[in-house]
Amino acid sequence: MTPEIIYVDDKSDIPLFGVDFFGIIDRGTNVIEVKPLTLCNLKCKYCFVSAGDYETNFIVDPKYLLAKIEDVVEAKGRHKIEIHFAPYGEILLYPKLFYLIKELWKIKGIEIISMQTNGLLLNEEIINQLEKVKISRINISLNSLNKEKANFFCGCENYNIDDLTNSILHLLDTKINVLIAPVWFPGENDNDIEDIIKYVIDLRKMGYSKRKIQIGIQKYLIYKTGRKLKKIRPKSWDYFYKQLSKLEKIYSIKLKLGPQDFGIHKRITVASLNIKKNDLIRLEIISKGRWKREYIGKIDNDYGIKVLLNRSIIHPEKFIRKEIIAKIIKANYKDNILTASFSI
Ligand code: SF4
Image (tube, rainbow, N blue to C red; front, side, top):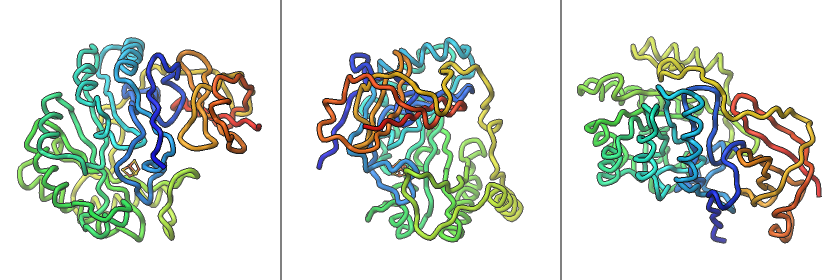
């Protein structure tokens, strides 16, 4: 079945705050996380948001995003703001990416625009366009330099590692900074992580600066609704940082990166509702979600909420525009992401 695509714009009535899988996430810092789409070209075996597999996908209208981002920047203060594209999907599939970046630079106060990508859709033409619209940094998820292993992790058959490393070289010859962001799967890609560290060191030896090419190793995290790599048990944060310290010593390279390394600092939280777990909340069902039992509720013009049903409905369209009272099951104050449950 071809997945349906829902366009989120001002006419859709779907708010941009509150839902984790699209829109704007405000974590109370100078970084505004933007999720303009949910489409992905991969279906990685470890994807913590199960992207590439949604029954319904979402694409957000760039003008709708721009208007809201303008308000957020105004409230946070018009200086040192970073826009970070971190979709539950692949940002290079967003049809209006270059337009959106160009328009974002017109918002006073935005000083960095960065994005996460799996990198496989990069090519000379796209890199040239990205340079033209002045993207500041690209974070590339790359878990192994070995084609077979990369195929395995990404659940694909033709992960083209040579094309990707060529794209990285091409990026390094532009004004764009690059951060290689492998996920470390303990016992599965330990050697690959070391190979990637050596790869970054070699690039630096070629003359690219520490700012130009960075490495940010990510801890493998397991989420209930995400896909999991069989057999792998994630280690504690303590173990993770100890391992990074060991590798830092072996390779004389900084691997433990914190908010200060990216100029991230506290700012006021713009998007905030005084809602707690177990509260009952009146809302209007405004749209389907990604899966059969998932819907999007509207609390007000700014705030949406993910609503999980106890069972799927045969005619979901009949549920849209219904007013319900749902129970909050997750209210994450740090990033203002809300989830409610409702029994039918
Ligand atoms: S890990 Fe990234 S590239 Fe892989 S399926 Fe998830 S969103 Fe897509």
